[in-house]
Length: 128
Image 1 (cartoon, rainbow, N blue to C red):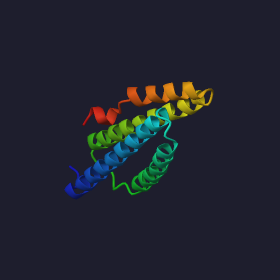
Image 2 (image 1 turned 180 degrees about the vertical axis):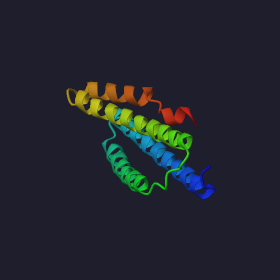
Image 3 (image 1 turned 60 degrees about the vertical axis):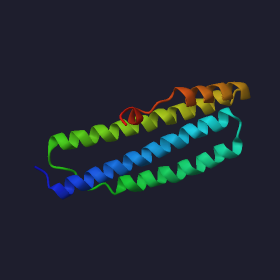
Image 4 (image 1 turned 30 degrees about the horizontal axis):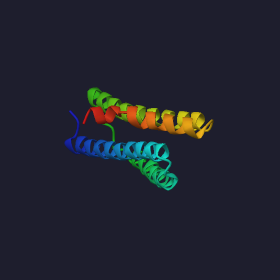
């Protein structure tokens, strides 16, 4: 059985990481919507907030507490982090595709960004 203090620290770290990932996901979707509505300034503001949150996430990950000794606890942690990373990777893929497709025409850009904003639901949010 793991040390309760270690388990508590890990649970707090995981909760904080999930909060950062959710905020980053929200900012990415807000950026999709800003582009769909042709609000360039809002989009640039979203990009700035995304960069701050991405840096915060990297710093947070670097401060991960000691891993639990129990294999099941390690698996639970790995599954939770993997789900969050999959969610962010999915958003990043949408973002890259939107830029690629959107660069072909403003009309296409608007449609694809709106589609991305409307259709994406984070796996993390599904678990809320």
